[in-house]
Length: 468
Image (cartoon, rainbow, N blue to C red; front, side, top):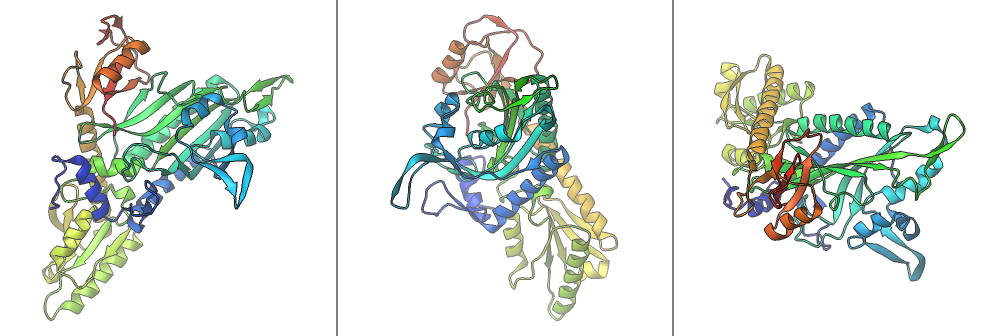
C-alpha cells in the first residue's frame, strides 16, 4: 500500500504513482518537457503500435513532417494562429544570424502539412488523401504541468485527410469514431463524444468533437478530438483538385488527434492504492513469473520458472521472469506498483501439484492455473482481466454524470442540463460557476428541457465539468 490514497488526494496520488512506477522523470532542466523512462515509453509504444494498426488498416499512409514551420505559412490561416499565438515557441536565430523569417516549433501540423498537400493534390484521382503521423508537438503550457496530462512537449498522433466533398469528409469523421472505439477497447478507457461550443472548437474548424473521460476526482480529461474543417484550410492554402468535368474545387478536410494523455487516462481511470493497474494490451509485461525458492530446491524451482517463462513467451505473451535475489513479498510489491496484470508464483508445492499460483492485479483474486495448458489458461485470464477492467471503468464513467437543474453547489461530477445553445448563457455557466462547458452530445437527437440559465425551452443538452 502506498502512503497517498487515491480518494484522499487524486492529484498527489497521481504524481506519486508516476514516480514510483518509473513512468516519467520530470527533472529535465526544461519545465514541462519530461523524460520518457523505459517503462512509460514501452506503454506509449504499444499504444502507438495499435494506432498504426488501425490507421494502416483504413488506408491511411504514415508520413513525417519537419518540426519547424515558417511564420509565413503559419500566418496563412489567421484563425489558427490566433488560437495558438500565446502558446507557441519561436526560433529566431540560426547560430549568431537572425532569421529573415521566424520559425515556429510545431504546435500541431495543419500549417506544416497543408502547403505540401497543395502540391500533392492535383486531380480528383488524388482523393481521398489520408495521412497520419506520430510526432512531438510543442505548446507553452501556462498552467501547472503534470506528467502526460499537461506538458510542453507532447507525444502526439494526428491524422489529416482531404476529400472531394463535405459528405466524403463527414464519412471520414464517422470512420474515425469506429477507429476510436477499437483503440479505446484495447485501453479499457470509457469516453464521451461531445461537440464543442463555437468558442471552444479548434481554431479554423467547422466543428470539433471532443473525446472526454472522467477522472476519479470528478474532473473531465480531454484525451483527443476530431475536427471537420470544410474548406476552411484548403482555401488559404490553395488545396484544390481538377474535377472530372475540368473545373476546380477546394478539398474538404478532417483531422483526428490524440496525445500521451492516453497514458494519463490509463493511470487515473484504472490505478488504485497499490499503484498502476494496466490493461493487458498495453502492459509492457503482461505476466510476471516469480520463483518461490525453498532451501535445497532453489535450482529445481529456478529451472521450472525459466521453462514456464519460455512457454508463455513462445505463446506470444510479454513475460518477465523476476529471479532477483530479493524476498518474494518485495517483488510482489514492485510489480503491483507497476500494474502487471497477472502474477504467477512457482514454488515446490506448485511444481509438485502441477500448477502455478496466480494473482490478478485488477481484482486481487488468487488461485491456481494448471501447468498443463498454462499458455491458454494465462491468455484466457488476460482476456477476462481486460473485459472486467472495461466494464468497471464504463460503470464508473456513466455514474460520474449527474443531471442537475441548478448549478449552485454542484456535485463533483460531469453535469448534464438543459442549455439553449446561446453563447451568452454558455459564458455565464463557465464564468459564474468556474466550469468548462464541454458541449453537447454528438449525434444527440434531442431531449426537450429548459435552459439552466435563461429558462428557454431547448432540445440541447449541455455538459459541463471542471477540467484537468
